[in-house]
Image (cartoon, rainbow, N blue to C red; front, side, top):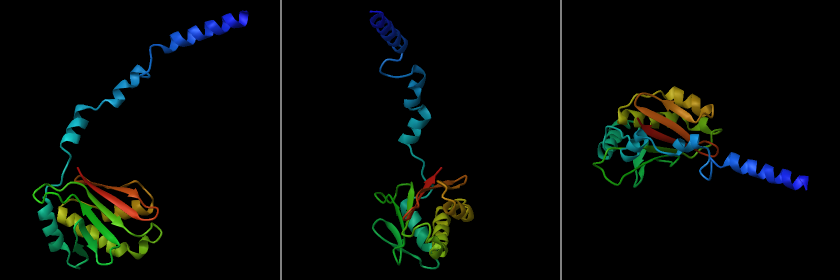
Length: 172
């Protein structure tokens, strides 16, 4: 009989102790799931580069002195298709947003393509007219760091480098 009362009292204590939290969890954590006005503004007006898609494509052609890149439906590729640059092509008059660079080499095989990779990145950053530090990017890529490069104008994230290398070039 005493065990039944002890269990009943323990159950009531647990229910009353947990009731302020209810289904929603800890009240102090509730604000973490709500978007701030700054986050909402960024989602509604994402950052873009100062150049339009059409002008960027012209700049790529002008800055590509070694003729490494070929225009495709989705962006630009190298002649051997080892490096692919893609971006939103829906409206040529629209400001350019995020760029994605895919390299069909693993991190271990990166030295075989490093020279071409560096040349392509220089063409991209010169065409965007942004500040860049390729040595920082290559060092972070070799060091398996998520943030490849961060300057005043642009941020480069390394999204995957196990079987291939993928970079996201994001305006600030």
